[in-house]
Length: 178
Image (cartoon, rainbow, N blue to C red):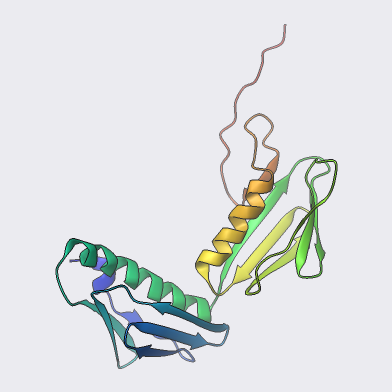
């Protein structure tokens, strides 16, 4: 049996969950999220706990049990605390600046790159070499961070580019001069 699917999800204060058939709607101080449970998984709310159970023991239902538990738990955490990802920009002349809802990036190209996030994700630039992405949906926050990193991924020789905060870049020695 799935350990993650079997584990009950605790609802913090201010978070409400509504289950209508397979539709799950979670709302809290940061916003609200919706998701549809996969076939074979049912949710019950009792005493501030959400429990997910399987209706059958097929292979796909067992596989979806833990996934459903993790996604509902992420929904509860997102509407109560939110998610953030921090990116670092490394390189001479590489920098970011806020422009409206989006961000303008100078990444060594012949032109500045403008990136506009989706509606429920916010981008903040506290320093020219740091970008903070935040939102209630973990998947969307991670997707925006991955799209920004893909504009100039870190290269292995000097380490220049856009990287996640704390990401270790495997460095190469390069050519040996005479």
